[in-house]
Image 1 (cartoon, rainbow, N blue to C red):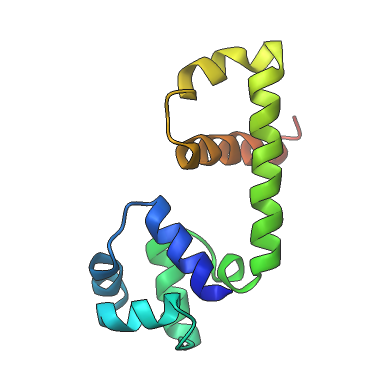
Image 2: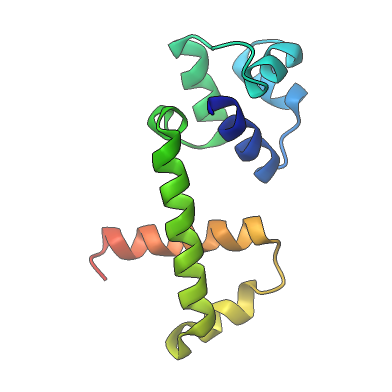
Length: 117
């Protein structure tokens, strides 16, 4: 499951296997092995992967929680699409890729939560 999360995040961020490997200090082949669940990285390497992908190590480790977060982002994105007060936001992001739309929704959702809105 870790491999799928790493792969998905890498692709969402338009980072090549080679670029991620360079940032982490390992080979591109090793990143591929992790993504294919054939190798388990050390905590140190996992921490570097998380940093390179802009997430926490906890996000990578707790895959079911990550999937729950993605579902929350989808629901929030649906709210943006259908709530009149949020229509201006949707008009700005509707032409983005689904992954980018989800990122915008996540940022707004987390900002709202941190500001108790």
